[in-house]
Image 1 (cartoon, rainbow, N blue to C red):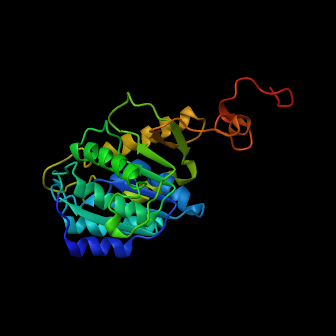
Image 2 (image 1 turned 120 degrees about the horizontal axis):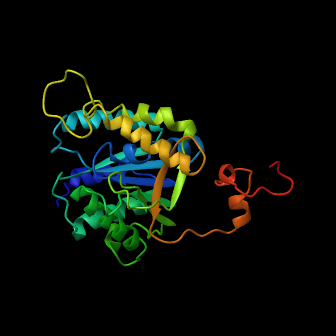
Length: 272
């Protein structure tokens, strides 16, 4: 995988410190997986940065120029601090040191607390490869002697978190984020990618995303995940390590705890 010096310089000039860094293979991958969570985080005052690895030039529908414009519009709706594209060749991702080094530099510049990316069990080969590359980059970013020539200080993110694979029901989420308040806005953001979605009467080849049922199925999945935690809609994520809990009582308490709506054994002071 090759990176032009000009593109690398542009990426470096754009990236700044954030709380959350989300990395996707193609423009629209991040939004489909977690637009609701990103909207919630931005509204809560957290700084969010997005990285698209490729321009999706092999996509059946739309052009790279259209995807770039759509990604910029979605980024504005998400209120992110930055969005950059690494310009990797779509369909030809490779697990090499050059790709890993590019990601390490972004991570060291962005200095995120959390890094989100694809799950290695996703169906798309680019998604699989990127999942492994990001995992390696998160690890190498904390090694002081790796890519020391860049002059960037090492950085250790607190957690690497994977998107829940949409086509692999065997993957169980580690946690679910309530996006009930962001549900409608999530699909407004996804709607920015008009070139990829269903457009009645549009000529040309159809794809999974362009079918009339695609967004209905995505909404249904969010609603189903919400039902698991007693809310209207949720997005799911998978952690690479067990989640630490400092105070289990507070986690399950009724003042915002995720399981209050499902409580089967109310306390004595709670009406039955």
